Length: 138
Length: 138
DNA sequence: AACGAGATCAAGAATAATTCTAAATTAGGG
DNA sequence: CCCTAATTTAGAATTATTCTTGATCTCGTT
Image 1 (cartoon, chains in turn orange, cyan, red, yellow):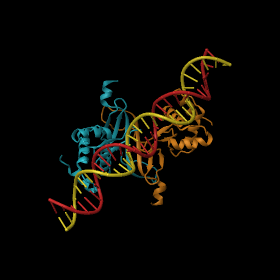
Image 2: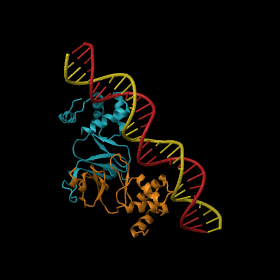
Image 3: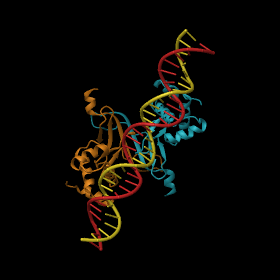
Image 4: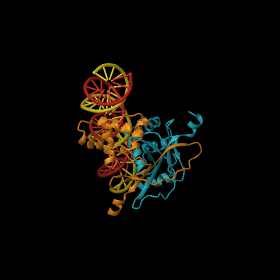
């Protein structure tokens, strides 16, 4: 797998080794951008690396999240989903088909919070009907 | 407890009975607006109603959420927190002290999503340092 | 006030995502 | 090539939440 400079940079920055397993997990996330859960990543990884364990997938995902190569997407109490989109973006959850889409809208940047709040991160999640389901007119 | 018309209205709208347990759970949430978890609600409820069970607290919370009197606040994988603020608002999570504050900023309403997305709900969560922790200069 | 049907409650068992543990394996620096 | 620390693995453990079952309550009807 060819690694983008972004990837190697972020790995170096967090002092994390790129092991075969982590590479595999990252490749799975880059290959199909459908926000899979840990178990789904596990199943896909096993196809190329049959010996990988679920615990390792969790470990790798944690390492990748820590090195900012992967983002966690939490929707309610559902299993955490993972996302390898490095661009700043928000998520849209379709209540019809259950899919999660990245939305790359530049959000209003100066959030107008009361004085004293130091924002380190803002997260926006939408919920509704995705274009595919809207056109199906379910 | 005196019930606001808002409360009775929403209960009627969802066809839900206001039982003693639900009233107690709602009272707990209204009393201290610190976004307690189900277990915290359970412990506080037990003070006035020692026979209430955790399962019932979960049931009541679910019923109240369904009738739109209470909101769930999910932050990462942490236990769900509950919030009786009926006004439209977002949440601020302080990474320093772990508290969750309601932020009643009017958010930009016309989110500029790509065509075809039907938004039913938008959720904004901030993460950072709250005023108390900022002034402590930790 | 008594009755019956359906909703709700309580206690504990069950579930499921995730984390932990301990032993085996691997990888990079000297 | 060896040593040490990091990583992996498999399975056990954890924990928030849900489910199950039987008991209790509520409300409309008589």
